Image 1 (cartoon, rainbow, N blue to C red):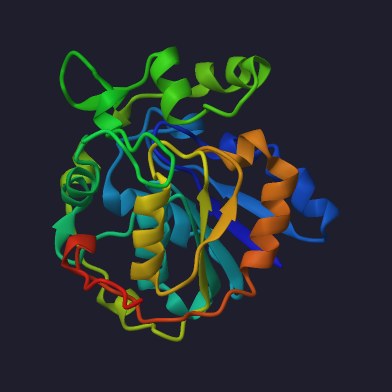
Image 2 (spheres, rainbow, N blue to C red):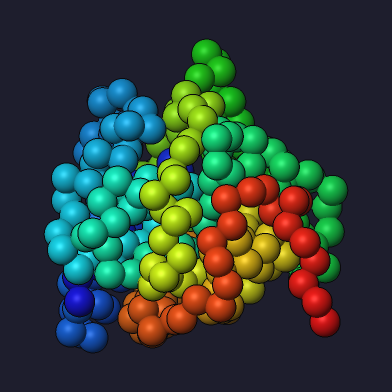
Length: 264
């Protein structure tokens, strides 16, 4: 299988470097997308349309589309535009968009910053770790904040490798209303959700709610927000296994707070 992977905020295509050889060992290929304003495309203007096109232009028939964190929204935008090319969609520690609303709305509503997560994480708001650039047009992370948010289960050597590669994340794409009607209509789409039991950003309670909106039972890995870095071999195996996930419910375009409680 061919996996097309979309990185999250502040990261770049390099985020998948440790997973690629593990996928080859399993007999599969992973191609990583570089979004505008990140990595090798740092000088380009970051826009939501540009993000989507960066994925679409690399898509091939039968791709397994993978989105990590905010890259999940970008993967959904691409799946909305070219559903005919997607054999499976896997979201990793991701937040689904709310139809007609900007991503910033769902981020704020999903991260109340109240403190405790009943499933064992700290449930802290992303804003707890963020710092704003002087022009207030992007946010970034100091090392301690990045470790708390993204790399709380990583060794110092891994953190030394990854932290210098982080870039400020532009706010403008987060303010654009998102409409993906073609995606919400694909109730038979093969799809999955991978969550980290130690994730402090898409913490377990939030991850399970997102999986409910995706209509799947989440697959869990004993990792933080970045299993592609801390546990690449285990993550690669789980990514392949995720393609066998079957939906157990419909796709839900509304906010997680509007969802009815599950019976039982």
